[in-house]
Length: 225
Ligand SMILES: [Mn+2]
Image 1: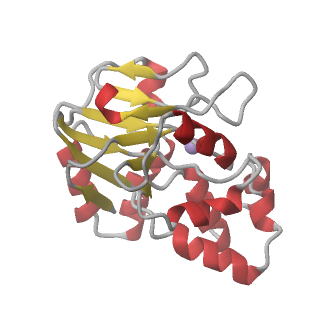
Image 2: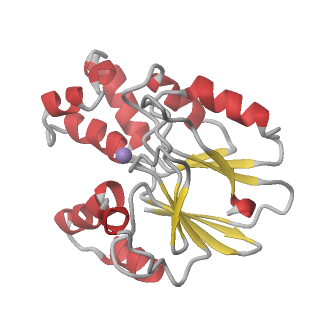
C-alpha cells in the first residue's frame, strides 16, 4: 500500500502530473529536463491512463526501473470495472473506452499490473520525506494515514481510506493551507490546476491538465519544491 524509496544520492528526482495517456508529452518534458535514466528517478501521481491517446503505453512505462507511480482513481476504475464493481458506462464517460474495447485477456493482464500500484509513495530527500498520493491523504498526518492503510481490517475499510486518497478534492476546494506537518512536501494530482502548479501549505498540486484544452503536463524536480 505504501512504497518507500531511499534518498537518491546519485541523481535527481522528478514528479509528473496526471499523464492520461499523453506519454509523448512526457518524453518531451524529460528530454527538456535532461533526465538521466541511469541516475534520475521519476514519480507519477497516478492517472496514467484514460482520456488521452496512449493509455496502453502505461504498462511499458511501469516496467522502467526509474519510473514509479501511485494508483489514481482512473487506474482504480479500470480495476473495479474488471471486477464488476464499477459501472462500465460511467467508465466510458470518464475516458475508459480504450480499455473496454480490449480482449478480456488483455484487460486482466493490465488490471494485474495496475492492482500492484501502491496507494502512496514516500521518498526520502535531503530536505525530508516527500509523500505522493493521487488526490489527498485521509487524516491530518502522514503517519496516521500510513497507519490507517496498514491497520484497516476489512476490504470495505481499506476502500474508504483509499477512496479519499484517490478521489478527494476537499483540501483544494476549501483552500485549506494547514498542510501535512510530518512531511517536507505532499505531492498530489487529480484536480486540474490550469493556472500552473499550486501549493497549499506544503501540499503541491501538480496536475496542470495535460489532457485538457489550455492545460499542460508538469514535470517538477523535487528539489525545487
Ligand atoms: Mn484523478
